[in-house]
Image 1 (cartoon, rainbow, N blue to C red):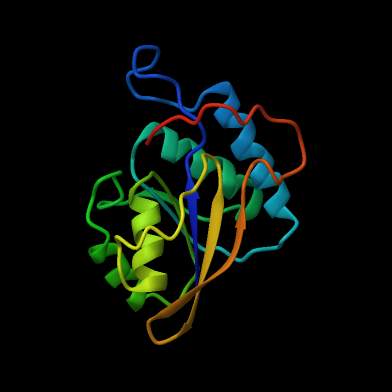
Image 2: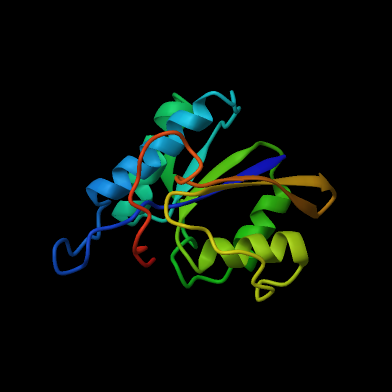
Length: 165
């Protein structure tokens, strides 16, 4: 089983858009990663997002390119500062691959818990628009299979300042 953790693209500042939708740069970086991953022929039957505009938009763009027809659903417990143990427990019960579009620090803590057994291990940080693939290799053990950032995907981007969660 694989879980794909996608950090939302760069978002507009709260003063510009109180819902913090993706900025034009954020839309472009997610689109670039999605087009790159379309070539990987991933089989993702479902996508969850936090319900926040930037995560929903990220999920919709990714699904359009890499999992056409897969349902995109808001899922409880994926907000930036939510505890990760409940989602990790759900993943242990799943057998189908899943894409989760969300935020830091949640995604980094979830990856750390799954791979290292400690949500505070601080294994990595996901740049905006990045997708991390984790693979369950046996009952409960996970490994990092690959990691794609907008910087690695074909196309031009300004990788300057990074928007927050």
